[in-house]
Length: 593
Image (cartoon, rainbow, N blue to C red; front, side, top):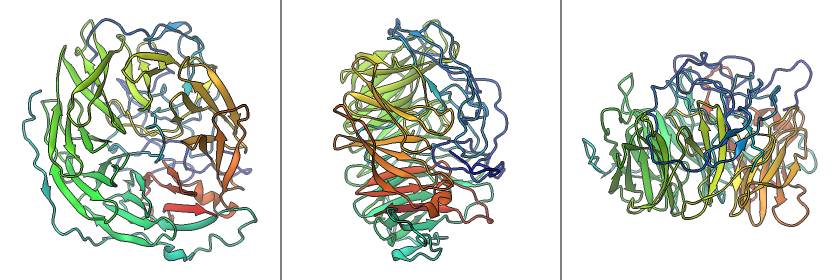
């Protein structure tokens, strides 16, 4: 992002930064730019850039993930080492090296050393923060850094959880955010608004949080409410006026995971810690009705096997199925009733389910097979969400790991090869057959956080897909960038369009035959929401919303920001609370005409 002379960069949407340990407050230049401890050795430590996968290899056994290391630094301020030239991918195409050189400094906190894109990371304080771009046609991808493109072509768990109805659905907030409720604007954020600029419809300040900070995962937009989780509470505000829709839902301990998407009937599930201290687990589930704020069923997630605890979990929604993923297994529940549906556990050649991604009537499972044997490999499977029955299985060539999904429907996955420091983006047909892999020169930079578990199949922002095309943002060497449309039929470029401002632009969703994208703010101009026709010969941007210049710097402080576009309104919220008493951090803002 362009900065005025002698002014430090700000934290904000678009530059995922490493989260600080829980006992250490954010540090470094500018809001939202915490500096973590240096990456340690082992799997997940900072690496060079990845390359491409290849033709499914013979059945084998993927290596058992080593213990989590300290998280790498997925910033965008340093050059990245390209993958080796000519490295064959899992599906047979050679890898061309990406251009080596200084990566952009988009102005969101201090630049940090990146790992190779998608490198798994784990930290003492991270609990599957969801990063959502709601209402997108496709579930979104997840990369932990800049991507370099290619140029060629069961047993039951030991303890069964029991769903039960919680008590009184009404709750009182312990520390509700201060706000500009009901159209009030105590800070006069709309003062001096220029002609053509949108209004700040409403905003809310962040609730109290520990000095070391706290997670604020997810954001769900319904027809009436913008719902946001933060630390130990979930808040709901009217989409148009910001008035509270229902009383905040409070939890006894901090929130550690949420469902990235809501169900079709506006239900979500929030996980919170069982207590405090080293032995606490992210294993307490609570269903919430977004329409009313009523607490529904609640249950405790049981541990799996010896190395399969509920210390960290991921939550995935597909239709009416909630899948709770542990490190080596998964348990499915009916999201409406809390009834346990089935378990997914070890199968076949020592295959352990390790991660999930969900979409409408699609539930994707990735398993690690073989525990480090000579034929170690990953397997991709699609499950029937209601029954857990396997619809198809796709084996991945030895050495390659499925670390992210760029889209669930159509299925587009991001794979890495740690030994070769290589990466690949591959698409699959509805029945799980290999379809194509990306063959476009350049560096791509979807915006993602980092994950506690080895893989994070859901949660990235800044990428979108429709039935035939993948939309990826390029990295920036100065400030502006491009969005590239890539054919899923052959992996080749269809078209590209440059950001209309000297600021990075990122896809949000495909809607009505147009790609909707967010252009980041600068120090002297607010962000923009633009649309781009996805068909035809012209792919120029059309401005849908111009956020006011007067709130540009506030808009730019949404650390680990969560964005959404719904019914002509733009919503942005933080993914992390700083816990600072010295700053008036905003929790969420809404813009509209």
